Image 1 (tube, rainbow, N blue to C red):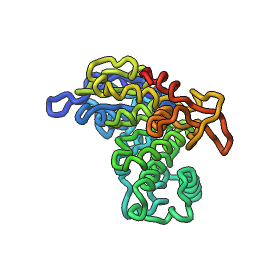
Image 2 (cartoon, helix red, strand yellow):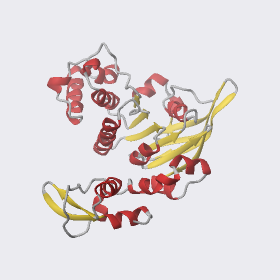
Image 3 (tube, helix red, strand yellow):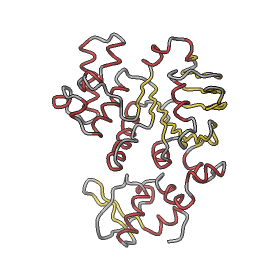
Length: 311
């Protein structure tokens, strides 16, 4: 769907993005991860031409992004930034309807789209449509920001550190929401983050950047198992690698017959969550229950083996 070819950006004689080439398939979530100043946000902004490339090109569905004026290009691409950038003087409904209004949608179509998105994001339209941004919690504002980006039914969504301002609990829920929404709409997502855990949790592929270059572009499991450079290895954190591997799987993957005592865990929980619960509670196995029905157990021994470390 997206082809980034030899993309470069110079600022005042200094190259901040150097010869980046990536392809992103339809329906993928590609996480671009790196430290501050690595060029990841500049790369993202060159996709929708908020920043003009110094060299190279971007094509979307085979069409060069330079083929139309930037403001028309951006109306086809959803964009979410840290803090969400909601218009403070506009209601939730008005914020979500911003791009459809610019595209000339009629009022009935806009109202229907706003209502549908609020329901999808579990925000009651009767309660939230007329609120102003300052009347929402941080998590609610984040949902509205993503809803606004999706309002005009874009096939591509760009996200620049969208969850950085959220506390850890709300952030985890926001990540779950994003995965559910992406699955529902099939939207292609390019997401910038400095958080390797977030990249691993969300990305179907991860691009690791440093000093303007992409050092490795691969699925999370390949990056964890085979980091391409010492920088990628350091960004992963050697001691954290077993737990990062566990975060890629789910309890259902290691389900066994049997029974166990204590607080249950769900089949969709990550193996990392299950292993942490075993270590915290000192239990050798956890019961796995879904909708009140016992499915079996997950054993600490199997979790440790999956992580590639001794029990």
